[in-house]
Length: 321
Image (cartoon, rainbow, N blue to C red; front, side, top):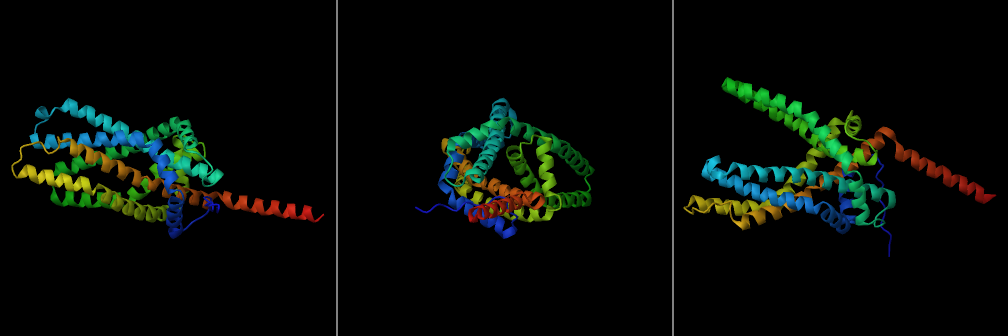
């Protein structure tokens, strides 16, 4: 039986190499990686997916009734809170599972660690990951509030030219910032787990690595997000088709609430679950890009290889005598 080649993480990689090594890693560890992800993060993702299905059903019901009172806002609020809470949990646990898997792989090689060890590493770091998330949210909250305030003022002006110009600038800003924010929101968890940093330190480390590599990171993440969203849409097709069918059925005179049926919730939950599992690949690619930027800045992998060459040379000299 041939031993699988271990992938070297601490290596400076270009655009193509980053994608190639991500695909190679997924192919090499497909069964074990996704099995581990489903066992550890799966329960959180599943509850979040079910809550998302129920939340969408309630939303369709609200749109149909056009009345919050008739719809039952209190009940909707509880479902929405459960969805948001478990969506946050699912995001943290899925990202940390991916990075814990990468860290153990880097230390021990393929097939030399168990799912339970990945889980232990995840829940060992769960506290600092929550702290990092809270700091990240607090950092973005004022920015979001400012944009919301400006949007309100612009819309209130009722000047069409100003509104169009503002939203064009807003879309351009989102296009420039979003791919890097996706990487940052993922990379901070790897910084916390790999380099034992928490909160501001993890964010500072990630920003430090991205400095001077902004557009390089933007290109990689832009292409990755587009590719993964195509896969997400494919996995979401059953939900989209079913929702269109029940919507047209309602329009044609079926008075039954299109979002209240159990099949709608089940299909939405299954599609959301599968789409979330697939989109977790973004963390693997973000991780490889993090290692690449860290190697470009620190050169730890190169220094390690030089030490290995030196040790090998010393051993050979000793054997000659």
